[in-house]
Image (cartoon, rainbow, N blue to C red; front, side, top):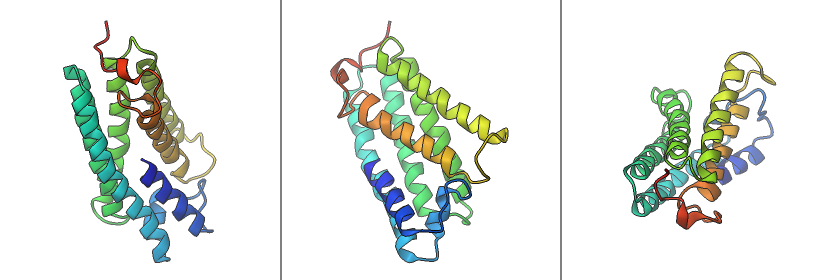
Length: 185
């Protein structure tokens, strides 16, 4: 996730034309400056590859079937995130992989939340899934700062990154990480 968010941040820094209220993040992947597109697409490809290793860590730490489902869903989300970089905006597979990524990240958060609902981290994951769905619902309903998709896309990416870094069962910043893979009661 760090590589993906870093690639997005670098691409935004290199693209003075980019507006989060008027553009989609994927516009960075087809920018007229090669450095912008390379930073965006490359960050997603590298981030997706690194996320597969994280999926393996989730799988290895899983003590329940539900935790293994979360690991498998996370692996799918990782592949779809890389797919957004592999299939830039305007290609036939871009929309399906981008939509799939945002649906998969919501599914990861919701499933993990359901599996670990007795733990604070599980309840936070459920809340994050709700926030992610809610902010897309608002965007679709026309409650937005502009026509661009970048703001709801960034909200989803940041929620997912927060889960990876601090909320998942193997999160490096989680204070209770060792207890999070136990089945809930």
